[in-house]
Length: 256
Image: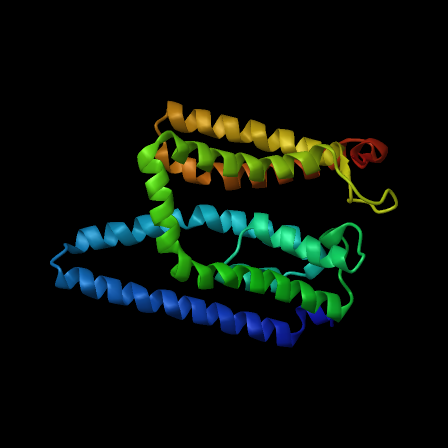
């Protein structure tokens, strides 16, 4: 059996998943008890619980996409274990790729990891990087909020500018990789290509369509689902495109 998906790894993943579920149930019961003590009607409590549950579906879809992305190199258990607790596609993929490339594996997690040492290193990098916000946030968040609040109070436009700049910078990094690519010409998947550009274009088109539908039909809930739906839709269309196009065209790549 592959060490990435053996009984030991599955056992750890099940234990962590059970702990996370137990924690959620614990706080849910305490919240309901507190709400009743405050005199909040049962109908309001029920509607809040249902709407909260539905709201978690959108990020769950994105998490499934992240697990599928990481599974090629890491198997299914470790990505599932990591994302059961905390994480997102922008961090997990970047951390895993950087850790594997530090060992000289060009192409990162696009290649199956067969060395337990590399696998363990990737697991530690992904985990320690996600732990730091949990440690730093309680210590520095209040000071950061005070500084940011002070800056915003002097010039409210800066708040929107800083948020937009951070988001655009993150998206630009992924867009550049999809268009320009880099790396070893002998390693498939290490550069940009027809499929990566197609995935980018498909995701943009689907996102624009969903946003148009949400605004036209006044479907506010669709805004939360637009990004994961765009990711999944682009993945499906790229897989179909790979089957339709000639192999030489579909898997053609270039390097920046």
